[in-house]
Length: 96
Image 1: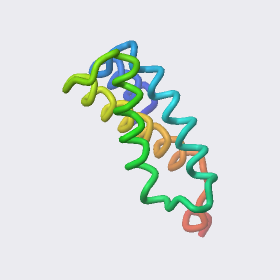
Image 2: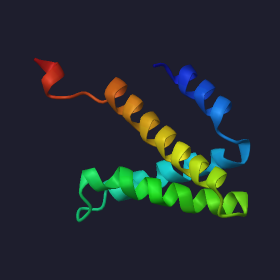
Image 3: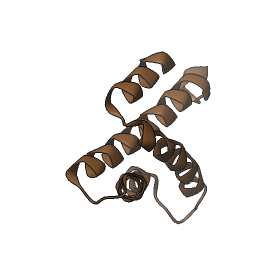
């Protein structure tokens, strides 16, 4: 999947108002990653809960649609981070 595919996915399924939630979740994810007491496996769960809460706020309602938008925002933020990390960060296994 390329960066353009991710943008197309976001435009197709995510409401325009919720795109700001994706950016906020990327920032929150970076902060959580730098927090030593938070395990890596917990970060996607925290981002999902945060995404739902932020989507409720942005959309102004606690609804099924806002919940789904929050989950999608968290998924896109996590996928975007992993695409970046797997594409550009050098790993010890790849150096061999």
